[in-house]
Amino acid sequence: MADTPSSPEPIPPQPVPEPVSEDGLLVRRHRLSTRLWHWLNAVTLYVLFTSGLGIFNAHPRLYWGEYGANFDPAWLEPGRFSGWLTLPAHYSLALSRRWHLSFALVLGFSLLAYMLWSLLNRHIARDLAFRRGELKPRHVWREIRGHARLRFPTGAAARRYNVLQKASYIGVIFMLLPLMILTGLTMSPGMNAVLPWLTDLFGGRQSARSIHFILAWTLVAFFVVHIVMVIVAGPFNEIRSMITGWYRLPGAKTGAKRGGERP
Image: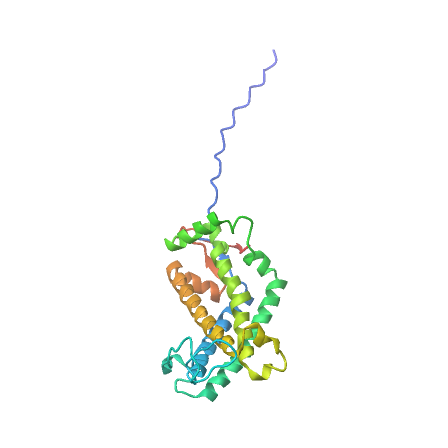
């Protein structure tokens, strides 16, 4: 009698692999162009702000319209700024102007180069463009509440800019800095022949000076908030990412390894 083949033994069920968390992973967060422009911009804006206050000390009053002098009513009289805030530390209108005009050229050309390069390498479309649903009031309000409670994204979510970061960076790069440059050009008498429409655009040279002053302090406010967020989120990790490009995703502290570039 032929042997009956034995029935195969049942294969034990294989465990379902758990999803791999990206917490603690080292990823490429900032490209070289972004890091270079960030630090160049930090130095440039510091020199422009301190030298601008040195220029402002020559006539520490602000007006609206085309004209403004000692006997005209000013809308703001903050007084002269202390030497520790100005460049140079002592009052010298000529030196302050030299510093200011020299670094204004650096700001203008570096901003233009960064904008063009960010378009070419798709940094703007990939990282700064708003995605579907991000501008919904419910989503924006959730981000505001999370930041107010110092709750920051972890894991894969930390690889992307949130809606508040996108709005801030877009506002600074494409609105605030260009307006600073345009109002600065408006205050220059030599630009009247080249761009005579600028004074009409801003309502007069003195109005441009007032707007320039307000924008400068708006940049200072942005800088203060930026530094506070860096400190709260982890200064070592944040500064390392802006120097080397590598960023450790917040979360687990063990088992980290290098991963792919930021999407």
